[in-house]
View 1 (tube, one colour):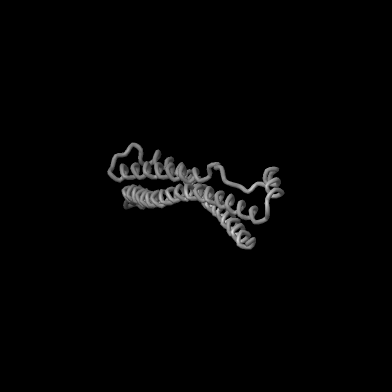
View 2 (cartoon, rainbow, N blue to C red):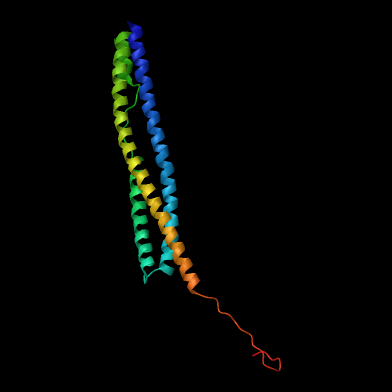
Length: 188
């Protein structure tokens, strides 16, 4: 009889440890994405500088498209950053703590009761941690998809900026200097 509850206790402990590990993995992914987003926000500053010197005030349709794409990228970066950052919020995770009450419980009860009570308490803690993981995964998923959409806008913005630069550079023909000589050989 004791082995049945001992197995239940071990299973509950493994489940609890798996949820704690899952929380750690989700937060690690969020930290990595937050680092990428912070880098993209820094690079966005260069885009704003380019916009200020080349596009503002807009005079052509392509310039308006570039400004609208830049605004979409900014909104995407902000939304992504907020959702990914919210994954790293402080939460009240269930833990297995050994305190005076726990020690007294072990002294006052039989091994079967201890295994059963601990298995039940640990499974409740695992369920609580699982709900935290689900919330964090939901936020991370929204942040991830927001990053993908923002990345698409970044690619479109880059193409438009390249097209704008190419069109403006091709409009400026290099000045050609013609050297002419008169009949006496002097350069005019």
